[in-house]
Length: 153
Image (cartoon, rainbow, N blue to C red; front, side, top):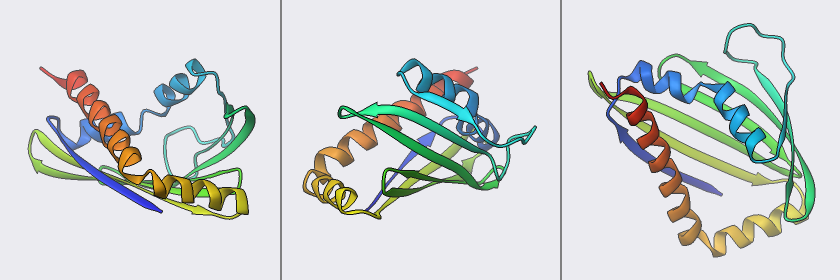
């Protein structure tokens, strides 16, 4: 199942890329929501090969997520691969400069089930696709607004 959206952000492409690759803030946000996040790699600088392991509770069960940064092409593209309980997901972030101070961020998520329970989850997501897509677009829009607010002069 693939979902995709884009947002135009009033910031330079470098500023947007810096915000999208601010992995420490994502780790802190997950920790605030009750997840345990542990960095698994030994890289000193952000780049391809970074990886994390996260543990969190979802729907009454403990889940473990393995997350790898597969592609890191400054300032245009970022690809993250993750595996959570029989479900793999590729998250692609593509940045395109529209002008010197405006950037289009395209975010796509491709989820593929590997087990029967994951297939059931994907099927239920497909049934609620309109609602899920609306929530997804709203969250991406809110995130784009926070990036704009961060870099407003």
